Image (cartoon, rainbow, N blue to C red; front, side, top):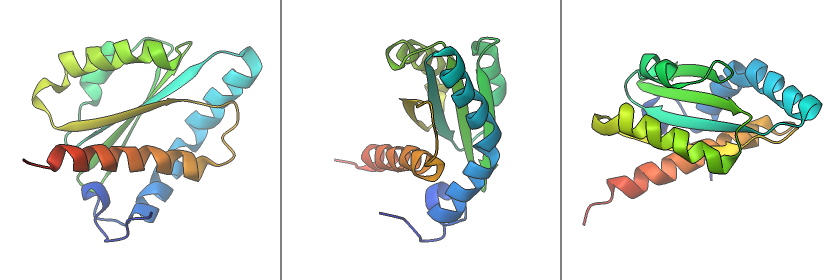
Length: 145
């Protein structure tokens, strides 16, 4: 289901427009990392941290030299995409927990991670699935009892 209320995740844009912006910014890193998956047969996990403040400097202190960070600001939202080569999804959880402990203890955030496939022909659907998961988690945390 596409959310089209014009303010998807506080971006000031619709979900479709937000996804299009993210895809245009992520095209080069996605092509590079999927090429490495095909060529060298290494796992790459993509982690997305969604925040409403810039945490990129803190993330840079916690990533390895081989990792990739792409921060995209849309409206009032920051989408921090971290590419973790040589890391399967199970080992990515320790990275996420380190980031949560070191950086995000006083910041409202949501995250989602998934292992990249060797081909991202359906890039729109792949990125949109990340956004759906973030939106679901954000809605789950906003429910008060």
